Each structure stands twice: as structure tokens, then as C-alpha cells.
Image 1: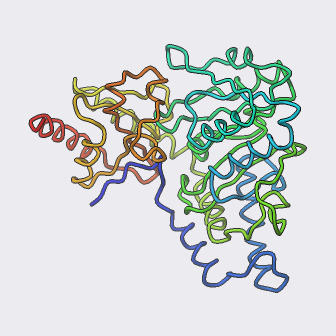
Image 2: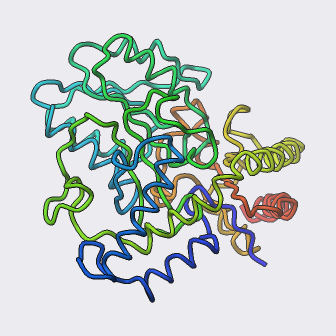
Image 3: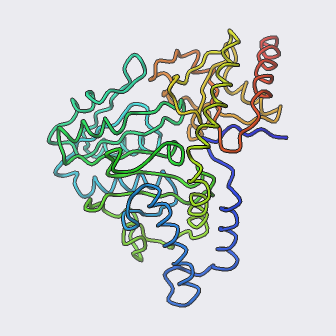
Length: 376
């Protein structure tokens, strides 16, 4: 029986999501822009999903836009803001440890003339609001900081960071990549001082192909895709109704149990940390106060890819870091102060609501360490 522990990359769709997608593909398959009965039925599904997800963020449905995923949401926001305001304000504040969807888009905008300030973690691996406030001035357009790091699980104090930035310049637009925190941590837009939030369906037991972007009312963002005017003109193109309906179904089904799932995962993480700490050849890279859904550690002397494939041979699926890096080092662990050797030997285990078996993982890691060391 396979043990899947790569949930930060993607999760198994829940039954409610699968059922909703199948229904939209086999029964309610009309184009939501069509004026006939089938089109109206599809449109009503979009309306329902939008309200469910908007309510979970404590925003209005008119402030939520559906996209193909989190990467598109981020690109649409950053590029759209730049197109509208870049000639007047060109300052962007971000961090050195963002997900590639933010990092690479910011790099593109920098080449177009953006003045980018990248705040690095302190020597203790923490971020402090005053560092972001210090980087803010009258020219600052945007501050984009992730909520939870996808490689270590580190939780960033975005409420305090965004609050500090806005005290210096109230006009700064704040954005958070909340892909790894949505449906895990409390996430209400006003509570975290966020003007924009990016989330993804397939990270919360929905299906791939749907994401959502919250943009606070009154903030003008140029559309990334022009055409038929779908998503109130922000994102033209026929909506992926099966994926969106599945997104709404997953949130409706699982959101009420968020706190319960967190506590259960917290206990799993605590037990795994304790077990791994018993072995001198293992170094834990995730901070103690990281989100419990992610645990990053290094196995001394065994490169990440080698250990990953050994565990795979035992039916255990983990990651060597961000799935988007395709095995290439992202530099995130090094930025957090992890030694280069440990970064090369890092394994990321990520949990979901379905995770139950961890002792087999521990046994397999020990087995791998012994057998792989002998073959070096």
C-alpha cells in the first residue's frame, strides 16, 4: 500500500470534489456564458462555488476571480498592477524565499524597470516587520510575501508585515501567496491586512486546473487575458467549470473541520519530529513553529534524490523540495541558514487530512541510510 507524503505538491481529490467534477462533465456541461438552460445551470454552479470560497476568506464574491491555478493568479495580479501603475510607482518589496511563481514574475518586472527590494530572513531564519517598513517609501507599489513557505513550512508574520508597510505608506498594495496556508491556518483577508490573496484548488483536495485570486474592491488590475469578458472582464476565456465546481465542493466539505484537521496533523508532526530526532544522522530543517503540514529534514551523507528514489522503491512518496524546481536546488533552504550540504540532502514530507502512517517512513529512512551508506 503506497504512502503518499507529498501533499505540499498536490493532494488527492476528495470524493465531493470528484463527484462535482463528474457531474459538471456529464450532466451540467453547458457553457456558463450561454443563454439556454444548460448554460444557466453551469453559471449557477460557478456562482455557488464563488460564494463558498469567498465566504471562507471573509470577502465578497465580487472580489474573487477564478483562474487556472495559483501561478496564473500571481502573474495576473503582479503584471496587471504593473501595467496600471508601473509608470507612476515602480517599487516592489518581496522576500528571497518566495515560490517560483512570485519570484520569476518579479524578476520579469525588474527587467521592465521595477525597483525590487528582496528581504532576506534574519540569521535566526525569521522575518521582522521593521525590515519591510524600512524598505517602504512613497514609490512602493506592492508588497508580496508568502504566508507559509512551501519547502520548510515556516509561517511568516504577514499581518504584522503588511501592517508595518501600510503605516509607512497606506497606498501600498499587499499580496500573499496563501497556497500552503489556505484551509490550514485562519485566513481572513481583513485580519491579515491583505489586499490580495492567491489560493489553489489542488492543494486542498480539489482537482488541478482551478485557482482563485482575491482582489480587494477598488484596486484596479489590468486583465492578463482579453477576450469574451468572463470573470467580470479580468480573466477572459471559458471558465473550467468542472475544476471550479470541484474546488467549491472541496471547500464546502472540508473547511468546517479545519481546526480539527490541524490539531490531528500537529500531533502527527510532533511524533515524527520526536522519532527523527532519535537518530544522529538526521537534521531537522523546519523551524519548531512551522506549520505542521510540512516537515523538512536532511539525512546525512545521502543526497536528496537518492533517498527519494529509495523511499519510492518502498512505496513511500516524498519530495526533495519544491515540486516546481524539478529536483533543482531552489536556494530557499540556504537562504534560511541551512548548510549547503544539508540542503543537498534535504527531504520534504508533507501531510494531508488522510495521512495516518509514519512509522513505516521512519523505518524506511533508517533502512535507506544503512544500505545506501554501504554502497557509497
